[in-house]
Every structure is written in structure tokens, then in C-alpha cells.
Length: 353
Image (cartoon, rainbow, N blue to C red):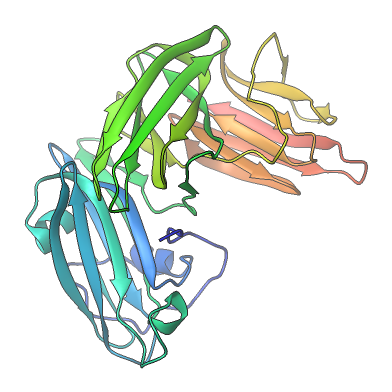
């Protein structure tokens, strides 16, 4: 269970798909086309609590009818297991996945696995593939605010692994929750050490029963810090940054540094990122909104670069292309590319919000 269904750049035409549990928008159908086909998917965190709901869409592009087993795990372990029938070239959608499928109120994680395709054995390759999108949302008088919860390949962080979330901020406008899902039949202990340039500011501990879900808020005030994760066994981990005014959120999975890399640090005054800024290996500049620093752009020794704003981090070895993109409470345009000599040049940058 080491892979979470992810978004990728492969566009699949889904115009012939039909059969939805509830009304499914054109946006949902198109979004399925950017998902990676899988036979095993994990929705690491989802909810039906207070004003939060979870929207899920599953697509079957094969010529076969098959079933998917959906298993819901909550804070105390197994909650419920349901069978989802998937007709050939059809999709299903749920505006409130927890209530409609499981009749459940609360938080948790969901594991989805398709049935076997013939008698080729019980492996990922022997099972039917499906497509999945999932988001947690809250409706308000200003519209719907969403947090995608299937938005990348979630690494299974194991004992001895070094794993970090970067760019963590907690203040009057922004909160950050961190969480874990233990997909194994053994208990797991987890520590999350929250630091910024002032040093360690808070340590959060999780004692995870088998097949259990937990999420906790960071209480300390943090200015663009990081989390170092330590776990005694394989777990899915995440941080979700939420705007206190809108409930708009961004979920990010931890990253594992390459072998031999040092721990993250973020110190000193930085030059402002501007159009035509050029950074060499190890260089860094700050993204600002008004008088406040909201993020950084860093060129790593291995030649990649990382753009970090709040709990959002995007790394690339070639280029960054964000155009009028919503990140936390900001709208950001950021275009940068790597030159043949390994340096990076910012060609466009604008921030509002």
C-alpha cells in the first residue's frame, strides 16, 4: 500500500462516461482525465463534520464491469467497508462521500482497492484500474472553498526515513493541521518536531492504533518554519494549511531529502524575488506581499529548485509555471527556468492578496 492516486499531465477523454451517484459537474469529469489509473488508492484525510464535506469521483474507463472495496478507518480504527459496483466506462460521484456511502459523521481515511482481473494472482497488476479525484470542501456565503486531498503521490514514511514539510506558518490569519494514517496492523508512534529560525517551537506526538487516523493542530505561532517527522513504522503523513477567514486550504505531503543532504534551515535576510533575479546553486530569494514575506524560492545543490508559500511547496529540475494561481490566500504568477550553467532565472512574478 505504498502509492496514493496522483494527478499527472495525461489528458484522457471522458465524454462517454455516465452514471453518477449524484450530479457530477463538467469540471469533475475533466479532472478525472488528469488522474493516474490505479488499482489501490488512499484518501488520507476526509471529513463529514461541521461545515466540511468530502466530494469523491471514481471513473472506470475499462470495458469490464468490476467492483471496488472501500474501507473507512477513523480515529479508533476500522469503521466500515462497502462494495462499489463500477459498470464499464462509467463513473460515480458523491457530494458527501462519508454520509452517502458509509452513513458516517466524523474524520478518517479511506482505502479503495479494485477486484482482481482474472486469475493472474493478487498483485496490483492483476487488478482492474480506476481513476479517482477527492476534495474536502466547505460552502459559505462567498462560495465553495476546497482542499484537494488526492493531489500527489503520498510517500509512505517508514522508520528511519527523513521526511519534512516546509514553509509552515501559524498566525492570526492561517492555521496548520498535521495528520497521520497508519495503514498497518501494528501500532505506530510518531513525532512531529515543528521549528523555525528561532529553533524548536513545538513537538506533537501521535500514538497510532492499527488502521487508525489522527489529525492535530499546531498551537505555536510559527513564521515560515518546517516539520521534521519521525515514525516507528510505515505511515502516510500530511500538513494542511487553512485560511482562517475562508476555510480555503492546501494539503501537502512530506518530502524526503536526498541521501547526505543536511537538515533544512532558513535564516538571515534574503533578497526579494523579482523578474530577472538570477540564483546560483544554494541561492535563495523571498516572495513578499506588502511588507510581509510569504515564501521563498530556493536553488538546491543538486540543481533543482523549490518554490514554497505557506505549506505549499513545488520543486522542479527544469521550470516553474504558475499563472494567477491560488496559493493559500494569495494569487501568484511565478515563472522561472533553469539555464545550461545550472543557474535559475525568474522571468515573471506577481503576488496579490
